[in-house]
Length: 125
Image (cartoon, rainbow, N blue to C red; front, top):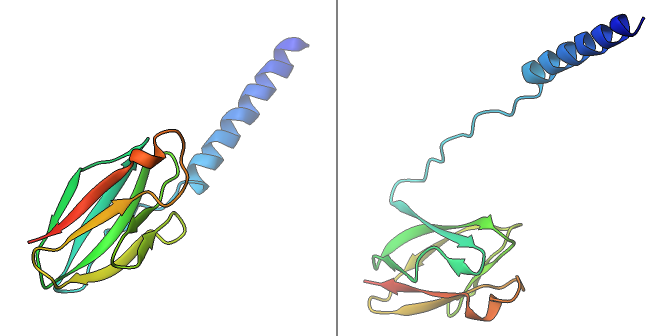
């Protein structure tokens, strides 16, 4: 009697797995198409660091800034521009007009022990 019970459970589990694979798969990520003349600048946050100590952008160019949290929950405040990228608002467009300007990027969400040292800069060339 136990043989039939185990076989039935395995059969039901297989059928459920096939159903979930067929209907529950997420869609492929869509490639992000930026408007003409807009470039992308991605700021990745991992633990208590940004992926780069400095980001370089061209003066007069419009950038779509995007925050990607790889590990942890972080924000990216760009001081002097009034921009605060957060998990709920991860993208924003900005035009850097002043060549030679430097903007400090700091984490805007209390993320743990290394929060105070989580800094980077954007340098406009």
